Image: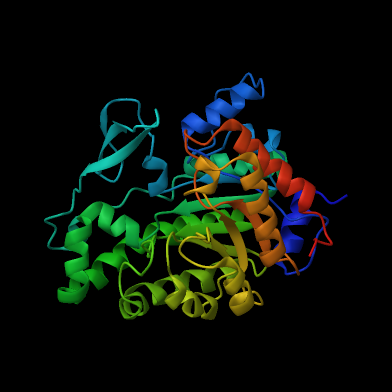
Length: 361
C-alpha cells in the first residue's frame, strides 16, 4: 500500500497509484460539525489556517495544507468587524443555512494614485512559515505538503482597490496597473520561494478569473497583465526545486486561458467546477499536461442530493477523469454548513470504494 505522499505524487506525475488521491475543504462550521461527529477532542479547524487541524488526517486525505497570505484574512477575527494586515475591512454575515462568512466592506486603496505609497506586509518574517515547517517536520514523510497562497494577485488587487475600480483600471489605466501589480507580486514571490526552499511538494496559488459561464476579464487582459507575472513565478520556483508542483485555483469558466496556463508550466488545476466546465472534456483536451483536482459538484449534488446521488457523482468523475492518473478527487469548493453529514460521508466512502485502480468502466 502506498503512503499518502507516494499516492499523490504518482497521480500528479500522470501515473496510476493504488487509488485516486482525495481531499475536501470546508467552511469552519461544516468542519467543526464533522469533527464532532468523529468524536474528535479538537475544535481546531484547517480552513485557511497556517498549520491546519486534525480533520485531513482523520479523514485520510493525501496531503496537508499550510496557508499564508491574503486568504488567511477570511474568518480571521471573531469581532463583528475587523481590519486585516492589508488594511482591508471585513464584516461577519450570517446566511440562511445557519452558517456565517466574512465579506469585505472597505477597500483601502480605492483612491490610490501612486502604488509606491502602499507598504506591503512583510513576508520575509520567519514566523509566517512556522506552520508549514511544522507540517513538513511532523508529516512530510507520510503526506504531501502543500503551501496554500490563494487570492494571489488579481484577487488581492481588487480586494485592495475594489472590483469595479480595478476593472476600469485594466482598460484605462494600464501604467498604473502594471506598477500596482509589480508591487503586489512581491509578496508571493517571497512567500512562494520561501515555501519551496523549505520543501513543500506543491505551491497552490490562484485567482478567480471565471464566472459561472464566462471569463470575468477577457483572455487578452489576462495575457497582458497576469500571465507574464505568473510565468516568472513558476520559472523561479521550478529553478529552486525542479520537482515542485504548481497548482492554480480559479472558480468558474476559464477554458480560454487553460492553454496559457499549460504553456507557462502549470501542473494542477483546481477546482474544475463541473457546472461551468466539463471535466471529461478537459481530461481529453488537457489531460497530458494537467492534473485535475476537484470536479465533484458542490452547487447541487452535495447540498441537495441523496447519498446515492453523491456516490454516482463520484463514480462519474472517477470514470471520466481518473484513468491514467492526473486526478485528485474533491468537492469543487468548501463544503458548506447545509451539506448533510451523510452526503459528506458518502463522498469519502465512494472515493475510497470506487477510486481504486484499475478504475471501473
